[in-house]
Image (cartoon, rainbow, N blue to C red; front, side, top):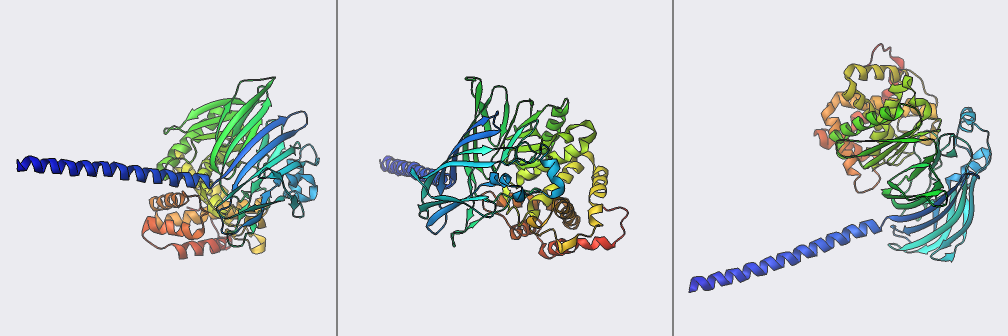
Length: 505
């Protein structure tokens, strides 16, 4: 009898514990969902409705931005990028004089933003363009820390025939940094840190946002964009594409009427799409990209995007890489430039990890994105074609960079805004890759790859990574200290100028 009573007592206790466990588990689950929801809600939410007016080389855009004040000060105004206004006057252009004829192949014609109205929380807002070239827009508001306000813009983006980051070409219409994007606000001072456009590397410095866009195009045009894009049925000779992209800083869109589309898939299911009108190029583009994705995922973990578009573009000064979108100049797609095309695509895949997902300050710390991605692209070449192919590339492309004197005392770590395009490639991408190579020789390839993986993972929460975290990742991967070694090479790799070099390994 006692045993039965004891069994009943134990059963009751277990039942209570089980119910309690379910309740506690439910509570923890609810708290976790609230935490995730809070993280998502703190991102800016941007909705765009865009119609391309092909007869006028313009887009009509209505934009709604739900802005979150994540700082500790009440904001009386928010400052937005208005990069399209760079094309309003020739003196504002970011291109060197030698490049102007190449970029503006049809001649310079003013373009820019025709802003019709701005509202804040449903009411007309006071606003004004700022800066000598009116590249920024200040809009008055009143948003307390931890709260939101909603901005609404109605404007036309006037485009010109050119090969710039916003423009119309023979192949495509390309758009990056084309809408009003809030800059990063210093939470302590309330001041916005804004960057001027650069021709030779990434420059947009902003917080991540979730984008929802509708893009209406003439019938038969193809579209690629950051995120997932879906075409809706045709209506009145126009087609609307719906795009969804979460947690991105560099939302980009391009579309064309002469592209053909081909698709491939990586081992993990990453969808890769090639958009080109060059016969035979799509397969080359897909094969290179899929192999690069597979290898990078083996080294660094899942690619930060599940869809990646490689689009032929009339952009004339090399590739442009955005989250899930890569613009490739048409001259790279001929068979005789297969090696150059392969390296551009490998570099673009590496950038999805370093610079885009593992975000760094794009101008002040550009080398942490571009030098690292350049070296990873060469490691991908080595993994695919062998050590001899790797060394042949290094000696063809890097040794000349090591043997040239660069005026002005520019170093790998100098702010990217101080360089022109040629000096930037020579110093940051090529010499910076040499520094990574010396690091690999000193610590070993496996330790370097583990350090890069840890560096990428450090940016998972979206904060801006710095050199300090890069060194920390290397130290954790190897169990040694690399700050002195890295600093020495970053500042003294130029000593190679005085050395004779027949073959660099």
